[in-house]
Image (cartoon, rainbow, N blue to C red; front, side):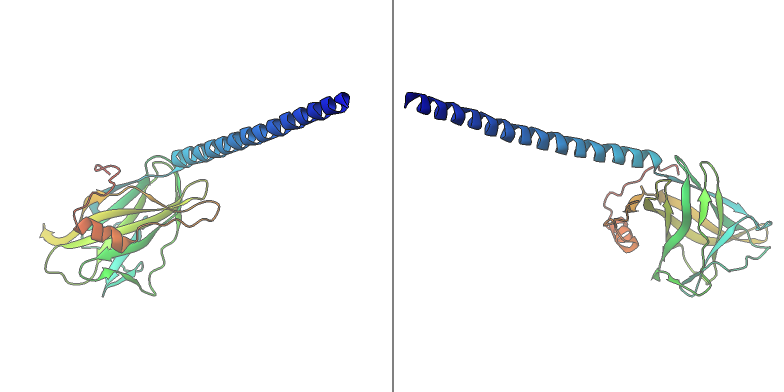
Length: 233
């Protein structure tokens, strides 16, 4: 009888130890799994940050004396890309280039202008997405075709992808006015700020919750702090 009780107690101790080891092993595996998962996400985010293009925007005033540029025009509150520039007018060209890494499918996604708000896209608005290698410039002639009687605030939202196919938007603030110099009309765009990019969608197809262009403008009007990546852009 004593042998049976001893055997039962011994078996119970072994089973208890096995259950304890299994439970401990499960929680150890679970902790390791979540640690590895978290590290993998950190590695992916670091890789994405290294591949994220940052747009550098410079401005140049010149005559449209060649065809190596695209056009961004505004007429009657609508966007168009087929506005033929006047050879006698001096325009402002936006010279856009990626500062860190290449940008793919780069295009103008939206434009805000006072007093219209967000510009409608006319049937003549058909921006062609382009690829921009590092330090390669995209020349965009800005042509405001309506009459103005004061300076106009302009905000342009650019959209592009990185090499991993993550999608970004980046907003740039300008002020537009017109003047004459040396008997030539000059359409001038002055840069104010260039904001940090917002991640719009991931390579896996996940859509991110980003601020709309209207929200960005309202934040700017309320004098809240915006994320300016480089005031020298």
